[in-house]
Length: 176
Image (cartoon, rainbow, N blue to C red):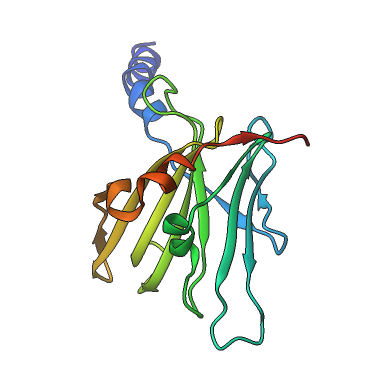
């Protein structure tokens, strides 16, 4: 009996830390831009990237739209250019919605590597959106330290974008 009570007490003491210890879920980006595995209550989710003429020496990214459920946001040039990753690098997406929503909204992050040692550690940027509203939450610059880590300082939108571009970052409600 004493052993059972001890086990129950240990579980109760560990429960809060177990609830806070969550991991982001990674989403596969399908050929059409759909985020496969995105939670149904916030989706569907897409990243719509449209490139210029395929015969050009280097394709330019002409438009980028993030779609989260009924919300969508067209990314201005200052953010869109971050999605132009070099050949050999790949955009990845991950997010979390199993945490205390009073502290942090459910979020979706796109990792945008310019060069990488591993999928987790790279030079480049990450761009994070609120899953419920499609509002841009933050941009971080990833600076590779070595193959075991990187630093990720927050980037001010004012450093990347003009005032007009920042104002254009308002999500809109889609018809579909």
